[in-house]
Length: 634
Image (cartoon, rainbow, N blue to C red; front, side, top):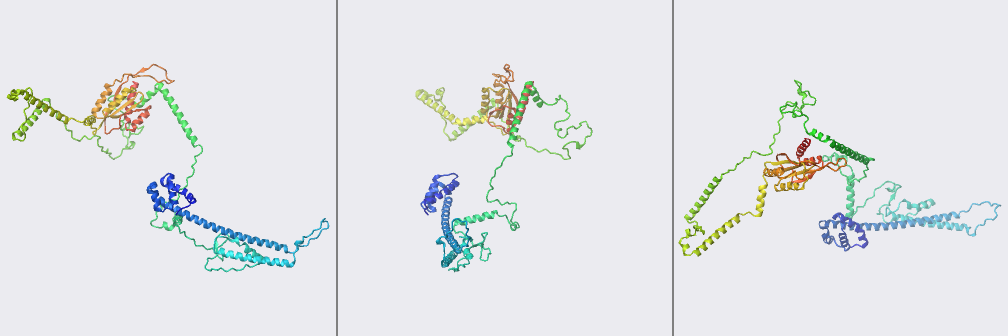
């Protein structure tokens, strides 16, 4: 199966394309290895073993495609060489026919010269007499000889053409009707061509084509030639592939639609994806978009100027206060004309003084009774609460004496029954003479050493017991976190604070550090004159954080705030504002809304509200902002 260098060069582009399709990228090493396998004439198994380190699982598929491509290349080169040979043979036959036709035409011209010329009258005005060349005079015997030679040569040419035509009949499709010029010339001369009998009567009939290129028989009837089926597997696959594509292109026939298993809702997808076409934009589309953006920018600029002017004159604050404050203040004990829960069913412009209003005048009133949906409480309060028993100091001492007395009695019983040896007397330096008596008098040095050893033994046992009960560093850390992290399964305690100025980094650090140490979650939103601090956690941590915010931090230190340096504002002196922290709201919720404590800088009110809305707590911002506006108007 070894290939030449030219064949390998022809195969190289296909291998590069297949490698890129299999691996997803071009790899020259794999291409070189594949060409080396084909060039050395390896079989499929050896080639697969040689290429397996490069292609892994795709090796067998790639080797099969490689060998199929080599076989197709060989068959195409073989068919190309055979077609070249047939083309050369056809060209040679055409040249022979043209040469024979040319000889016949020359002979006809010579015969036309033999005919006697017509006499022309001589004009006396000609200054020079005409003289015929001597060589142009032909005798009658010579003319007859020339005629016989021409007829004989024409007969031989006809016989040659008949033989050629008989050979061409054995190879249909090589030449058409244009090669019958010689025989047509013989018929024009009145010479019948000789009949040439075919040597083998079993050979196929000659190919005859009409003016439209269709195959016809001797009577002029159209016939169909038998098509040769390909024998190579690659060619068979190509034929089957074309037939399959043709079947996909064909629409379902009527008998298929009448079939019980045919579903007209399922569309037959085309074999090839439709070609993508250009999608051009309409003229002036981007000009309209640009004009819209310019208009929007001008509108925003105009709104900013109006807002700046309203801020100067104080209209801005009054407008915000009007939006927040109620439209009509009611004194204590006054009854409103209509409650807010009745405004839904009473239409606008309805006369409330009417004595007997009709039911149709109200909205949403029917004969049906609406039962509100039963909602479970956010906190489960059905669990029994066990109260701990608290003892006084006197009761605690009494309980301890009783417990120790019972333990001592149990030890005495074990000694009395012989289950354990009696304990050694607890001797100290102070009771040495009273416990040992005469032994201490006989050898006081020995007795003192014995007592001191007993004392050291008791001290060592006591220290070992304490060390065994002592917690490790990891256990102490877990115990401390457990004390700080409270149980919030029954509800999360939330507090919302409002600070006028939170620009001091030291105060920011205190808020963040204490929230982290108390394991509180929340957020700090920084906005001009409205800084909102939201913390979530247990009740004990909230108590400590509340004391930090309202008492421990001195908010009025370094709180001087100056006006901006805008050109439109006057350069007045710095106006000192009293900075303070206010508890806006505290309560409980079912779950936490925020994560770890973070600071968020929001230059606009909408941006701050959007940040709270993202966590489902926009009412915190509304409450703090409304209190800030009311405070600024006072």
